Length: 66
Image 1: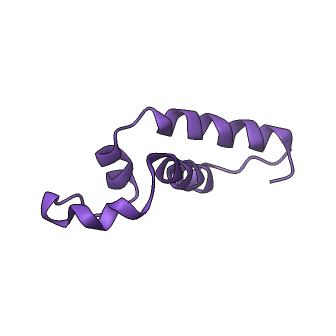
Image 2: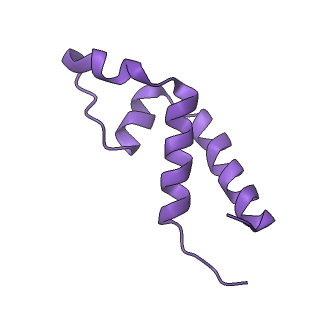
C-alpha cells in the first residue's frame, strides 16, 4: 500500500467500521455471533475488529490502476 490514495481509502474504511457495533463487526467478518459463544469474540477489541473489517473491505474493493 504505497499510494497515498490507498492509505486514504483504508483510513476511511476504518473510520466507517468504528461506527459499527461489535455484533455488526463480527457479522461482517463472518464470525458466529451466537450469544452462547460470547467468549469467542472477547480476544479482540472493537478497534482491532474495525481494523480487520477495514482491511477486508479494502481487499474486496476493485483495484484501479493509476
